[in-house]
Image 1 (cartoon, rainbow, N blue to C red):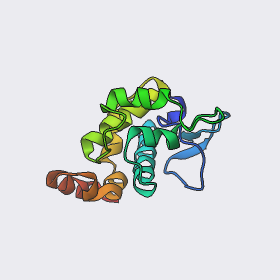
Image 2 (cartoon, rainbow, N blue to C red):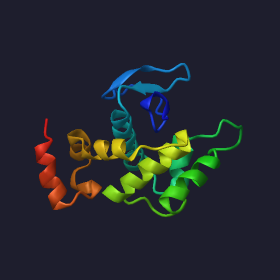
Image 3 (tube, helix red, strand yellow):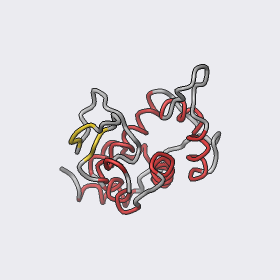
Image 4 (cartoon, rainbow, N blue to C red):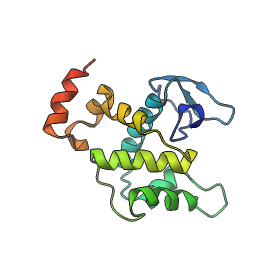
Length: 152
């Protein structure tokens, strides 16, 4: 079970996430569906990597799961757990559909000890996610054509 339909444990920000229906008592966004939670996680992940020039799981962990302990910048359990599903803590993150799928699973497991492949697939097929990432995300020409079927 993934708490609050929020597989990435996204906290409230100024962003008005599609499907956001509230905030939990633990200060995490509550999404109406798990697919919308994965959708938000994938978009947030892309923005963090692109805008903050993050290139590895270790660097991502310092932002996604900062350590609350004084003098430490990252909770070392998070990058260790995510790298099990991704392959390496220091391998550069190159966005492709496969990498997005693997990271969505790995982050969901690190944050919630579970993942839902059907919800990840639904998020990856969402026209807003496909449009957000476009060809930079590594969609094949066939997937680009399929994207038009889901246009808003």
